[in-house]
Image 1 (tube, one colour):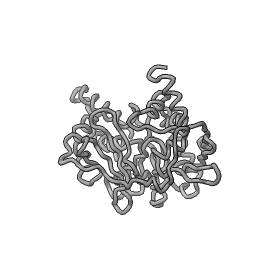
Image 2 (spheres, one colour):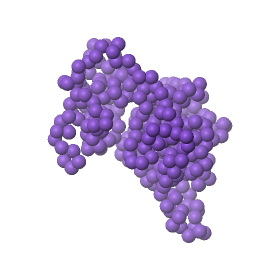
Image 3 (cartoon, rainbow, N blue to C red):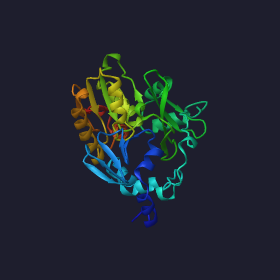
Image 4 (cartoon, helix red, strand yellow):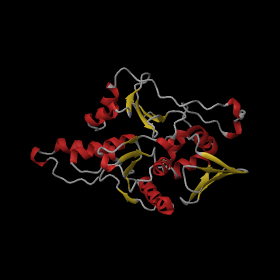
Length: 322
C-alpha cells in the first residue's frame, strides 16, 4: 500500500483504543465497571475487551486505527502514519508494563512560553488568508500568540473565569499540529461574539483557523453571521456539549464543519444527538459547510484568489453564504 508498509499497518492495528485515548485524549475515558469503559465525549460510546462500539453513531471497531478512521474521519494511510509517528510513539499493549498510578502523575497544563513578538504567527495566518485585524484582535485578547521555542501559533481556550485551560499548537512552517499536554478539551478554542447582542448564538468549526477564517469572510462579504465561535478540535462534540451545559442561554447552533464526507456525517450525527438530549431540544440547529472549498480556511483563501483575479468593477459582487 503506497505510503505505509505491512509492518506499520500491523503496528497501528496493535494499538488498543484505551492506550490511545490515555495518551491523546486524557480524561476522555470513564470506567463503567468490570472491563467496560465509556468515552465521555460521545453519547453511548462503549469500550470493552479491546473492542469499541459507538451505539449512537452506529459504528464500531477494534483498536485505535478503526477509531481514527470511523469516528474522526481520517484516511487509512493518514491514520496509520499518525499511530506510527516516531515523534509521538504509542506503546502497544502487549509490550506495555503498566506503572502504578502513583508513579504516573499527570503533567499540569502549562502554556508554551511566548515569543517576544508574534511576527511569524501573523505572517503565517495572513498567508492562510486571515485578515490582519482579526489576527491582531485575537492576539490582543490573549486567544492567540507565538511560542518562543518553535515559533508556533498557539490558540488558547479559556474557562468561564478566563483561566487558560486548553491550547492547540499549529506550526508556522510545515504541517505540525498538536494539543498541549493536559489540555482540557471541554474548553477548546473559542472566540466571543463580535457584538454582545449575539451571545445567544453558537457557531462551531473543526479547527481554530476555520473559526478565525469565518470572521475574515464575514468582513469581506458584509454578512452578519455572528455568535460564539467554537473549535471542536476535529469532529468530536465534547467541547460543544460542555459549552452548552455551561451556557443554557444559547438558542441557536450553526454547525460549520468541513465540506467532506466526514464533516457531513459529523454534522448529521451532532444534530441527532442534540435533538435526542432533552436539555438541548430548545436550540435551533442548522448546518452550514463552506460554500466552496473543503473548510472555511480554504474558502477564504479561494475568495482572496478570486478577488485578485476579478476585474475591479466585478469584485465583491457575488453573494456568499456563510
